[in-house]
Image (cartoon, rainbow, N blue to C red; front, side, top):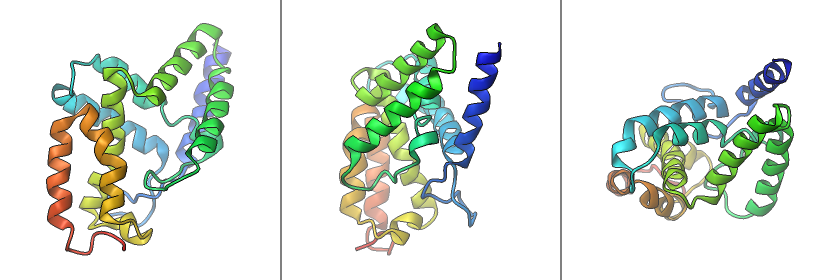
Amino acid sequence: MQQIVDFILELDKLKAVTRKVRPIGLDRYENSAEHSWQIALMAASLASYAESPVDINRVIAMLLVHDIGEIDAGDTMVFVEGGWEQRKAAELASVKRIFGLLPAPQGAAFLALWQEFEDAVTPESRFAHSVDRAMPVLINLANHGGSWRENNISYDRVVNRVGPEVKAGCPALWDYLATRLEAVREEGYFGA
């Protein structure tokens, strides 16, 4: 029991990992725990739109563990270019440490879920990626460009970074986002 309690208390640190997206209508930035909760519910809501049939419980579990590496590695804005190999290595070291707090079978199962998300080859992981990539877009659209304007993120950068992954896992969601992004392209939502 103590190993599980230690693991759960370690996860509390995810609430302190600040992201570069502001919750709708708030001045503060969201944290990674809020993001994980929101995309888990988003996936459950969109499961019927997945590119292939998915085990939604597996998708939700994946989304709940996918950012745990940020406890040690911190968050990097999805629209940042370069440095991803070092970042992913740091996240892997972090999840190995954190999942290592659990009894071996549980820790190994969570690590396998995390790795499946990272590999993005199963229908579940592709769908999980699509939801993960779409959420900052939805929030930035609702915030009239929010972090795109703050960080000088261009329309092309947004489309190139999230489009392929969202389309691969949830084509209907990408169709929706592509239409919305094009509609606000000339309204000052993006950086240069």
